[in-house]
Amino acid sequence: MTDHRHTTNDGNATRGANTTNRRTLLGGAVAASVLAGSGLAAAGPAAAAGPARPAGAGGGPVIGILLYDGYSLLDPTGPAEVLSRLPGASVVMIGKRRGQVRTDTGDVAVVADRATHEVDRLDVLLVPGAGERGTRGAMEDPALLSWIRRVHGGTRWTTSVCTGSLILAAAGLLRGRAATTHWASAEYLETALGVDYRAERWVRDGRIITAAGVSAGIDMSLYLAALLAGEEVGKGIQLAVEYDPAPPFDAGNAARATPEQKELALDLLARSQV
Image (cartoon, rainbow, N blue to C red; front, top):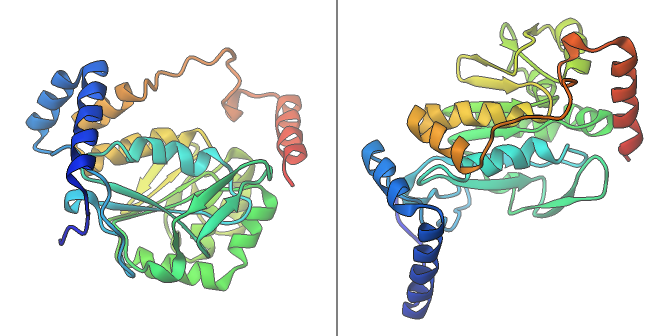
């Protein structure tokens, strides 16, 4: 693949000094030896994207994350944090149009660098979840569903987080498959959409991987990183982002929650969304 990057000598010198400083601070000698053993080169700046398929740095996998109005913030950004650390990989945010796309709370926006009509081929597609408004809006958008189906036709992996699996199901990609979703949407996924729901943090069925609610996207993306680059690299990324959850409460599993706790959780979600 042609590398379209352009740098100046001064830029190279500055970037080299900054890279050296970061490697010194983050134990670069150890990281370099692990990467050498894995057969993967360190990622450089992402190459410029073409009209059909954004180019991965060094020819690595191109991971496209869909943004649509009303998505939940951690659904795309948690996996992006993990997957952008894959050597040679390129992560691109994709919206119906370029520019800011607002989350379900309306307080935060993430920038889509590419529009869907500019991208029709990806190595990995990730569809995040949303609240009621965002999920339903995406499920009832024929153009968006058509784009998902078209891109899925050429992916190595198609993935979702939270209620993103409902969107995959609406696109017709989960017929006869097992999948997971946010616990509050499990019954709808199974009874209304005919999907075999599994109460797991992530579920792989063929080349489709679905994650449960919001934070489960981090777990799924680490698993995906291992599929793309090997288990040692996956473990290395987990350590790099210091993902060692130790929450103050044992309250994150719906199977152990009381009806009152579930009602409160759903009320908090509903109140925070616009």
